[in-house]
Amino acid sequence: MACILAIETSCDETSVAIVRDRNCVSNVVSSQIAIHRQYGGIVPEVASRSHVETINDAIAQSLIDAKLDWSAIDAIATTCAPGLVGSLLVGLTAAKTLSIIHNKPFLGVHHLEGHIYASYLSQSDLEPPFLCLLVSGGHTSLIYVKDCGKYEIMGATRDDAAGEAFDKVGRLLKLSYPGGPIIDRLAKEGNPKAFKLPEGRVSLPNGGYHPYDSSFSGLKTAVLRLVQQLEGEGGEIPVKDIAASFQDTVARALTKRAIACALDCGLNTITVGGGVAANSELRKQMEAAGITHNLRVLFPPMKYCTDNAAMIGCAAADHFQRGHVSPLTLGVKSRLAI
Ligand code: KG4
Ligand code: ZN
Image (cartoon, rainbow, N blue to C red; front, top):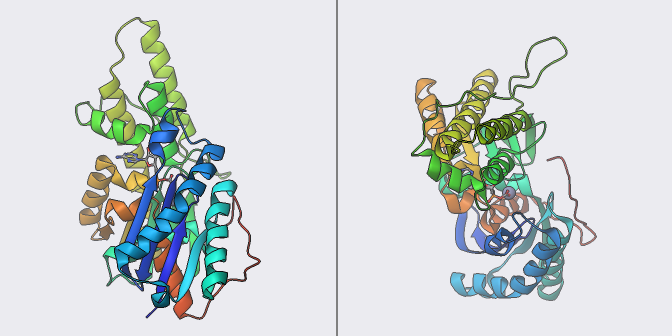
């Protein structure tokens, strides 16, 4: 059994968790969304400063919530890549300092590996192999999970991440940041068939299409043109119908690729993670397709889908049990393949 204190500061959540193997003992998450909303998106410098202000309290709170002291902690882990460099450095520096002060091993964890491990926190019987559809503000990937540390990226976005597309379309529709949850809410009262939008297929040199890669920039441009055309006609913008049509197109594109990939790889389980896993239409379409194709589709609770340190602790616990630790010379990276 490994008890890990884990830190996640790769983007705009300051999070510290204590995890015993696949069990989350405490998970403190302090979101910066309210701060970034006034700028219409994440401002990296503001994010780093906010992590610095919050991290010490979050560490203390994680121990209080878990009713534990440092003697119970076997190792300290932190997200080391990918993410905003200044933000990652806050977590890395805190984790290394704690490792030195308390004389505990240190582990750096890949952020996407954390998202994969989020599924284990709520589904303790889950075992590889399975397919993970990771859809967040920064990532859109289909990851074949073979074992701890053994991953293959089967598909990815060629341009915008799914959450980024939601947020950019939100901005076009003059909605507040982040646009994803607002589009989801408005779409419930809109007609998803009102506008036919392009799904964004990725062409291959042989004239066909990549079966698992996606592209959302064309879809975003199509929404922009539609809004410009409707504005030009002088009528009212049917925001709810546009939201529903856009959301339906994204959900269909993601579901089609995830199901095709799982079937082609002979995998019978798909887990979905990242902030866009909250999307009600994606859930509906993935669950329906899972039933049609006899696949197990797992959506972890939202607290483990969005960025959190519990998922980082869960990944670190598995690595630690296998004898993996990181050197204190480890740095951060804005981009790093999993
Ligand atoms: O995983 P996350 O919290 O942060 C990272 O990007 O790492 O994901 C945030 C993204 C944002 O782009 C947000 O708009 C999107 O998830 N999101 C949603 C919904 N809730 C959050 N997108 C669509 N529908 C939602 N209900
Ligand atoms: Zn993330």
